Structure formats: C-alpha cells, structure tokens
Image (tube, rainbow, N blue to C red; front, side, top):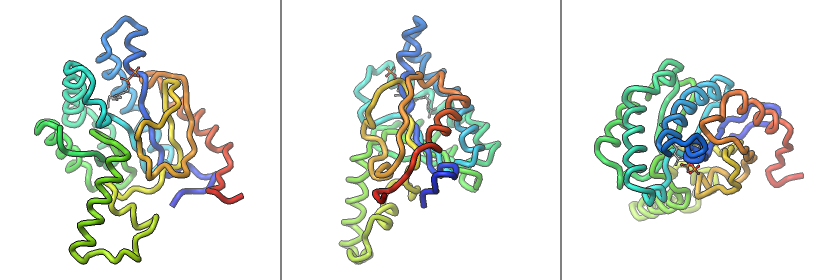
Length: 236
Ligand code: FPP
C-alpha cells in the first residue's frame, strides 16, 4: 500500500502544533492562533492533495484536549462548526472527500451535525481524502478496534485465523492505508498518541515552524527531505 521512495507519499499526516505559541508571540489570544491555523490548513490541505498525495490526516483535537480551559475548548468547537458548514469550500471544489476519525462521545449535537454535513456533501468525491482526527486518540482507536473485533468474533462473523496486520485496518475508524510521512510542527519531538497503528513505518519530519506559518513552500521542503530518505521497512 505504501509507495516507493521516488513516489509521492500516499498518506501524509500532520500534527498541527504551535497555534497557541504563534498567537502569544504576537500578543494575541490563543484562539487567534487556532483561527490562523484553520486558514493555513485549508490552503495547505489543497496544496498537499494537489501534489498527488491521496490521503491527508490531520490532528484537529485530541481526547486529551478536553482538559484545556472551557473558553479554548468552546472556541475550537465553534471554529470546527464554522469551518465544516461555511468554509472548507476549497476541499469541495477540488473534489476531496472529508472523513472523521475519533470518538463521537463528548461532542455536541451541533458539532456532530456539522461533521455529518461536510461528510455527506463530499462523500462522492474521489480526488483525495482529508481525514480529520477530532476527539481522537491512537490508543483509543486500537481499543475501539479491539472491541469491534471481539464483537465480530462473538457473533461468528470473524475467523481469528484471518486476522492479521492488513485485515486489522478494517477495524480502525476509517480503513486508511499506513502513513508514509508524518510531520509535526513547532519543534516538539513527540507523536502524542496520534495514529499509532498506521505510523509503524512512517518517515517523520519535525519542523520548528509554528503551524499557522507552515505554508505550501515549507511542505515542499519537507517533501524533498522525504525523498532523500531510504525506506527499508525493516529490510536492508
Ligand atoms: C495545537 O496547537 C493545535 C490544536 C490543539 C488545534 C488544531 C486546530 C486547528 C489548526 C484549527 C483548525 C482545524 C480544523 C479542522 C478546522 P497548540 O494550541 O497546542 O499550540 P501550543 O503548543 O503553541 O500551545
């Protein structure tokens, strides 16, 4: 499923970090960093998918992010509703399909409705997939997959002999391919419970740029770095 080194990465994932620091550096409220980040995401997402990348996964909100102040959580939730219902037009125009990964609990009906709306509007699009990870955790995804497996086994729908590294993907939130390239912005060197199963062999690039400033030009530089890597998948 993953592509060879000379090819454009099939699945790119981004941990969009540094919105808060971007804003603080300018004497602005953290929320302004998120707003700027959402504008960056729309332009960058279209650029990345136009480059030939087929799947772009982004970390919009982790299960742990609910621990942030009520003001910040409320701001982010409203921003999501705004983006999914009014903005994100460029993704529709470019025939990109939007899907979501994450748990549905904790999210308000308003947020859930806005997610359904953009999913419905874009479900027939075939140019690429934007996978928005919202109320998402990588360990949680593996636990939820394990529960679905147990249920299928219990109901006689699964022969355990057929379960392997490839078929396990079907039980994840979306049956997306492994991640070829992971990017984390803002200088933090962690994967923070992002797509753990899909990231087993991904190349990782960490940049110091805060996400709102991570533009198309910076992505192209990261892509050059990716092309220089020698992907061995455990072989030699
Ligand atoms: C991490 O930066 C960023 C987030 C927790 C939110 C990411 C959200 C966006 C980019 C907004 C738009 C997204 C969509 C899907 C419309 P941080 O706040 O942890 O920054 P810091 O580490 O500098 O404090």
